[in-house]
Each structure stands twice: as C-alpha cells, then as structure tokens.
Length: 357
Ligand SMILES: *Cc1c(COP(=O)(O)O)cnc(C)c1O
Image (cartoon, rainbow, N blue to C red):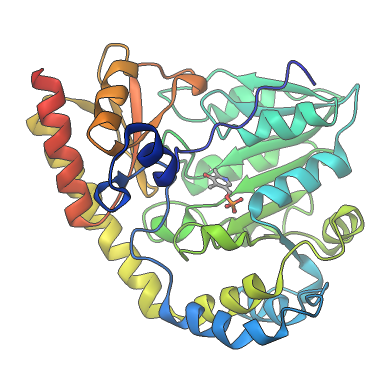
C-alpha cells in the first residue's frame, strides 16, 4: 500500500481561505468539476422533507431511486446498482473482479481512481499510452491478456475532456473478450448528449460484459451527497450488490437524487451554462494565445507550454482555485472547471494578470 498514491482532490475553498487569510466569499473554485448553479431547488426540498427521518437507516436497496432510474433508461430494476458516488461503483468493481495476479487496463491521463482502486486490491494496473490525449482504444484492446478482468474507459474522459464516437466504441466492445468487464464511465455524459458521443446504455443488450457508470455529482449538482449508479447485466449487478456496504447510499442522497432526476429544467440550465462557459473560456484562451484540449465535459485542460505549477500558485494567491494535473502526466496543463459567467470572467482576468507578471 506504500506505493499507492492517494487521490488528490481540488483544494477546498475554506482551506485556501485559512492558508492565505482570504475571505472565502471572494474565492472562485473551478477545481472539482462541480455544477456552478448550486443544487436543484427540488433536490433541496426533497432533502428538507427527509430530515425528520434521519434517525432511521436508509432503504438499503434504494428501491425508489432504482425504480426511477430503471424507468428513465428503460432497463430492469435488477440491472441497477447504486453507489456512494460512482467512485463507490468503481471500487465495488475492483473488489469483486480484481485480485493479486489479475490486471485492469486503463488509459494514460485517465481518472486517478482507476489505478487507485486497482492497486488497493493488489491487482496490476496497466496504463496504455494515450493518443492525442485521448484513449487509444485499439492499443487498450491489445493490452488485454488472459489475466485481465476489467477495462476502465471514460467517455468523455477526465481530466482531458477527450471523447470517442459510437463507431470507435462498437469496434472496441467487439474486440474485448467476454471474460473482461468493460467499465464505461459516463460521469459527464449529460453534458455531452447529442454531441457525437454514444449512449453506453444502448450497447448493454449486445454486451453482457459491459457496465455503464454514471453519477449525480456533476450535471445533477449533488457532489456532496455521494450518489452514483451503474447499469449492467443483472448478473454483474448481483455480484456488486454482494460486495457493497448494506447502506452505502444515505437517505438524503436517495431522496435528492430522485428529485434531481425529475428536474429537467435544472439539467437543461446546467447544460446551457456549461456550453456558454466553455465558449467563454475558449475565447479567453484564444486571446491569451493559449492552446487547450477540446472537451465534452464541464471542464477544460489548458496548456501553458511550460511548468504550470507556478501559474497555479499565482492563481491561488489571487483566490482562484483550479486543478493542477501534473499527477496525471500533464505538468504543463491546468484543468479548469466551467463556472458561472462571472466566475469564468474572474478566472480569465486573474489569469491574464498572472501571465503578464
Ligand atoms: C467525478 C468523476 C467520477 C465520480 O464522481 P462521484 O462523485 O464519485 O460520482 C467518476 N468518474 C470520473 C471520470 C469523474 O470525473
């Protein structure tokens, strides 16, 4: 476990405020791909209504939320697994399918939890070199051997924002042997709908070794509550259900997720704000002569063509928190989550000053 490097989260606002004696109200955090709109009012009302029940254990089966998800996506209830964030889903997969002597394949510059969850159960992580910052799905299929049990793919990927289309996914799934579970991580899919990305759920019927994981943390704006889910074959769902904690999703999270799922206006607004914010940041970067990786998520990786750490430090001193991604093999980049128009403008102003220093 000594070799396991811990997940490095975005710096919390209060931590920076304490460290630099700044007013937390003046700090802009664009570091953790959180929804800048704040939670859906419908989710907040559902939480309020649930508070008086806090003395009870939550429904360990998450019956209502699973029903809603099954209805929404036209799948069976027994295909749904709930997680304490989709992070939990990734860990359940590792615990159920990986062990010493076995391996998991994932891409370079992919989500840090894939190697962490893999190493935590003593399995080998195989990071496959990226192509143009994105997944090289052919090379990933080539990296699979008889000891591979899991392949993690993210579409779009974090922290690069890169994506692959339906043809690429279809070719990849056809190449992966049946003994290998494909975890298709769609944490940002709600932002990308209709933008040439495949809907992973459409492949479940043909590929019983596919699991699609999604979350309420990003477009649904409920990161603090920790609720995510997987949709897979009933066989895989049954296996994950056996290794999960009995009450892995709390009652406030269950209630809020149901309400959020119904709040189509909130989701539409989230997408609108994200599209406008992405365009705003791209314009800003262009004016500053910076390059970036085109993204389909709610974040964008911008390249400074030199060590980005001092730029990050200078931004922090001005109360702007973004995410360094040196730990992802991208030392010249910073990843910036899309904020509100005001937050994006503040970030671009401060960045402009920092780059002139
Ligand atoms: C944010 C993120 C997740 C999981 O977030 P949870 O809050 O645990 O649901 C999973 N995968 C990727 C690629 C992410 O960026």
